[in-house]
Length: 88
Image (cartoon, rainbow, N blue to C red; front, top):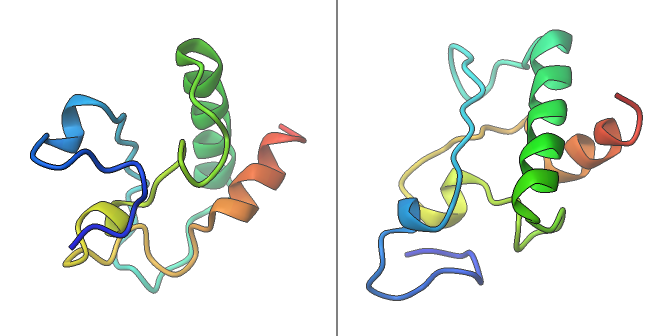
């Protein structure tokens, strides 16, 4: 069951969202500093280009759409990503 408030019932979220994968070995492993920086820059660039809000409605974790997934893991937090975007 999706927890994300922006879900459109009956419509595949891949049709109205942009997915970004941060590849790590498992959900308990912390991403490298380079991965954090790259993710922050990419989210900021995509947000600017497509006018996606930098909030919980615009930046969504995979497990908020598909509860059976554990990504983005325990380390990829929206708050940390947003803070990084201010400085990179």
